[in-house]
Every structure is written in C-alpha cells, then in structure tokens.
Image (cartoon, rainbow, N blue to C red):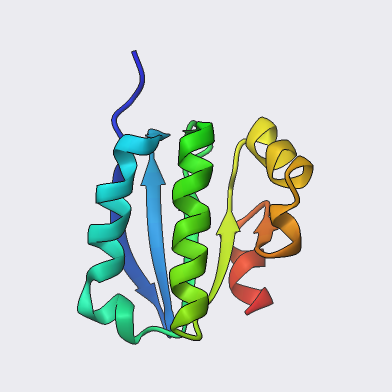
Length: 114
C-alpha cells in the first residue's frame, strides 16, 4: 500500500521548505496547493521541495510539481528540489525538469544554490 503524502512547511530564513513524505500522486495536488496557499509561503521568494528518501513520485505527481513550478514562476519565486530517490532523480533528468528546477542530493546543497 502506498504511503499517503504528507506535506509540512517550515522556513529556513527566506526559504519556504516543503517537507514531503509518501507518494506524490494526483491525489497530492490538493495538499500541495493548500501548503502553497499558506500566507507565509506566498511571501517567500524561494521554495524548496524536500523529499524523504522513501518518497516516490508518480507521473501525475510530476504534473503537480510542474503546475507548482508555473505558479512560483508567475509570482517571481524560485524553486529547488532536495533528496529525491535515485529513480526519481533519473526521471527528473530524463524528462528535462533539471533544466528548469535545480535538483540536489541534500537540503544543504539546495539551500546553498539559492
């Protein structure tokens, strides 16, 4: 059984960090939108999607990330991704998302890239 996605928000200075666990699917879109709608997130200039190493992203979950990327770009925010599982990182590379979103092995590396 897939782990239901959990999204929690914390801040590292001016970066809104979304800690994500579980499977990111089409069912996750509401949780991601709710987190993004948080007033403090709206005021942040940087957004980091920080995945748990056990997390997985389905094709519709990648769609959710792309929609979130569009929203952040419309608001002038920048986005990075940290800790994706190896197979997820491979998919990011294959579909070309790494050209639009920085993908990093650690949260520290992602924060330093902003």
